Image 1: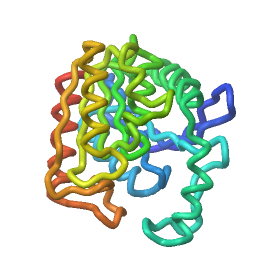
Image 2: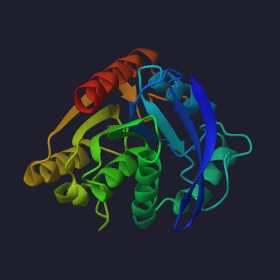
Image 3: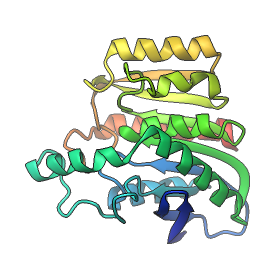
Length: 244
């Protein structure tokens, strides 16, 4: 396994990223892995290594690079007052417009890698789910697959809500929803499905019973091991069918 940190230039600055890929000689499809609001950290590096071991190039960007390089939290832990307050500060640095800029830069970087086979997928957790969708919309001819797990605010009343991008998306989509998630209640899921259906997007959605918002991430207080493993297996099957 090859692990390194790379910097990618965008119109807004320089994104610090983790890049992980198999050590064997060959060409591999790529997956852009978008973190939750906790940003680049050890938990996601481990997830990236697990995915790379299945035969993928994995790029994990710092979503808050416009603020500072990772880590952006001093003592990150879900549920503490310090972390919650910091979340409010960093969230504003992730925008719909910025996601477009970043998507172009990430795809351009991956296209330049000698190990890259030519197909790209995205996967995002929490706020990263929206970024995965936005990347698919920004680079419709390059992104073949996009997955979201406990994605937040995917179909809100905001004029730039991710679901409004459905007509621009050519990728196949997969959504893993928590059964208990105030960030994506059933009415939002219904709105998302309606937008995707109207645009003719090929997608699948699944509700993970017993799972709460954040259940896939090991350092989250609501991590659900059984359902997280199920989600991971489903993601691997999804990428196998769309990228390999």
